[in-house]
Image (cartoon, rainbow, N blue to C red):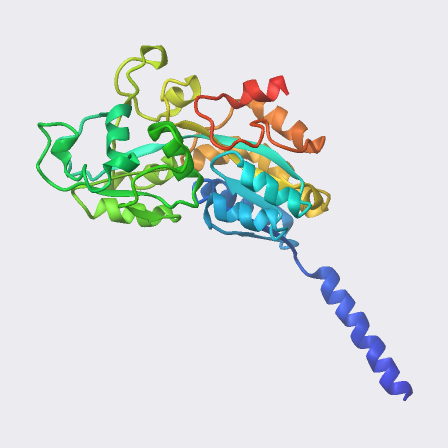
Length: 331
């Protein structure tokens, strides 16, 4: 009997030792657009943690990520748009408080196949004509957008309806979030869109700038003209200066992570977010996005340290033409 008790005590002690030395887990999911930044941060963070912390990063889309986050299933949610009213309510219902942290800017890119030699630029009005709900089944050929373009079918590719990129694009171009034609190839995985456009001479699509930057050899970017000289004259591409100065309109947007307040009190999550804010400027550039001004990162880190709950956007979802640093200073 004494031997059995002794054996049990040894097993319990061993179990405790193994558990205490197991890697702490940080669960992240959400936007495929923000994924390259968060994945890069996670990789670097795990190096300095020496295996003591494991970070998983999923790509179920901004909407899909918020469903998990507001159910308390994840610690951090990647988002390519601000949280929506329905998601605010879901978090409230489940008792999940959140801290909103902007991490970078993105110029949402309009993309065609490199063999497309007729499109030199597009206006926002032309993009709306192509993507609005009324276009389904009616605007199907290139020459219906501009008469001197080919009498060939347009094959459209875009972010899935659970994606924040889809929400932002429809708000910016069509004028109403989550409103567009439905006859296009969609995916929450931007790599699927890259592959589709690169293999189709008559394709046109949209996704975050980083996926263009990493596939320049098989894609072609379309300059966009909002026909508002106050934002800069003529067609403009989403390069660094144009996004930071706000001349690439209306397709410039901030990118976010949302941190559960409950998770923020865990030491491993706190260390991760501290590292994220101090690394975001460098790593966002490295993966193809545009860093916030240094003053903005300082304000964002203070927001986390003070555990400021809620959204600077009031929980209203996508908003066009905003500058994060101005909103943070007002707060």
